[in-house]
Amino acid sequence: MASQDPKLTRRKLLLGTLHGAAVVALSGCGKLFDSLSQNDTMNSILESAEHVNRRVHRLLSWRNKLAQEFSEKDISPVFRANGNPPPVTTEYVEDAAKQFVSWRLEISGLVQKPIFFSLADLKSMPARTQITRHDCVEGWSVIGKWKGVRLEELIDRARPRSEAKYVVFHCMDTDGDGKHYYESIDLIDAVHPQTILAYELNDRALPVDNGAPLRLRVENQLGYKHAKYIRAIEFVAGLETIGGGKGSYWADQGYEWYAGI
Amino acid sequence: METAREPAKLVYRHNRVTRLTHWVDALALMILFMSGLQIFNAHPHLYWGNASAPDTAFFSIGAANEDGDLRGYLEFYGRQIDTTGYLGVQHGPLAPSTRAFPSWLTIPGYYSLAGARRWHFFFGWLFVLNGLLYVVFNLAVGHLRKFFFTLDDAKKIPAMIGYYLRLRKESPQNGEYNPLQKMAYTTVFVTLTPLALLSGLAMSPQLNVEFNWLPAMFGGRQSARSIHFILAFGFLFFVFCHVFMVLTQGFFNNMRSMTTGWYTETLLLPKDPPPAAREIRPDIAKALKSESPPAQEIIELVSVADIPVDHARKASTEVLPEADSAGSTSTEQEERKDGEPRS
Image (cartoon, rainbow over all chains, first blue to last red; front, top):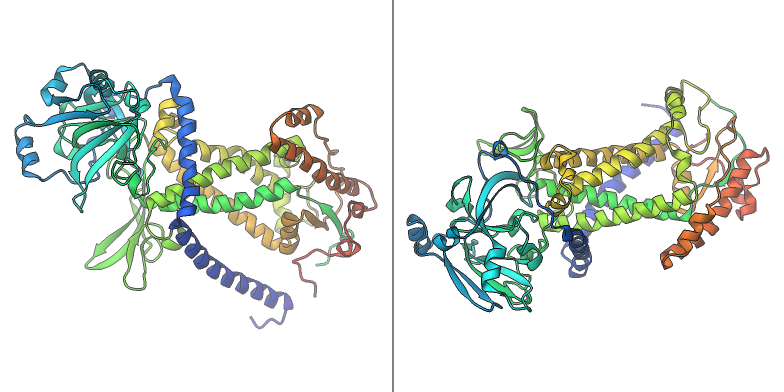
């Protein structure tokens, strides 16, 4: 290492400089990206991609294609439950013990005819069964068999007014701060043949962990759109008055309202 | 050690569109990679197939608490490696924290799946549109053809490796790009990029509805996710090799050619002249002209960017270099190869 070769010292100098520059650049870059990530203007620029995604996907969806349906042997051994823990109110717990006989689904908002449905009412309506894959925004997937009533069936009975553009789901589960879960989809997704309100999972009554008594299945969207523990469905013209203004518990916390990607 | 060199001559190597899209691509790839690692951190396990049954991951990064001592590990097909401090567990100013990839490798640095997705999808679009601009423009001007890997190049690979390892004095290079460069670029263009895009799209539930074959072509959605992750490291490997070559093969000369377009050529003249310059095809030019304003811009760039390239080609086919006719100064003419100190 006692070489006096100028080549070597120059190389050392160059490498040393590069190493130093890399360390400074990395921590500087990190700080820059962290502050950009919290900057409102930057976020609205980045969010433009969500709108492009939604528009491009909508251009494709006129064909009304179906999500892939799997066979019985593909069903996952455990259907992972994620999100809020089940509701703990006395009302919910007692009703759950009695197979939700007191529970009613309220349909309201911009409709010709507000209606209430009991679980028995829903079960007496035409049912759809589908074995589909559930994709969580975190990255994992599970396959389950769902049985329920098509949302379009309920829409036909409630007859939304022409101003109605979105279907909002009000849920019984709460986060750590006691805030109720809420989610919304547009009428295009609402009338998709595979969009159902499920009351059965894998041939058994929908378990409490997976959203009993009723949860949404909207197979072209990520898991967080599939509202669990549904209490009421509301038809609205805009989402500004729902929750934090974005119409979705997770969209109000920075996730995409359009979760098709 | 001294090998005979031709007198240095300045060539116009990269057109404006190539230079612009190169740097946009560099930025987009960096952000896509780092925000992708943050997205991975939300569920640091990889699986094969459609679904992700617990305990079936073939690859995981995790943390284990051993008697109050946090230990990070990487697990691959049941074999564990301790990665404390780098993967799984990161040392912090106050206490160690558990995260798969450390904060200095992710965008944002703090944990935010929502934030990472915003960066990833925006720069995903930018990456695609930027790539399209590059490909369409360079197909039109005939630039892409120059580094498309052929069977003839495949035969020259051993000779080229020999040249780089200094086992051979003569480079088998014929044209502006050597066989290894052609192989690397062609792989990135026709394999890595399309597969990375498709495996990314295969994770979208809506696109799965529209195109059932998308996840199926990778063997299921979880396989697509795993392949997307592996391909990201393919890009990282390419970038490492690319930057290594830039640093060792004349850093300043290469950086200049990717910012100003001008490159000092010191290679020995090839035995066979490179293929003749291809003009922009009149029908393509016409088609482009009839389109929207951005296409008009492309036409302008074609006419401006193409002139020096033609001169440069002429220079390399004729014995006397006359690249200066494109407007370079005489000082640039005399420049020697940069980055290789001569004592």
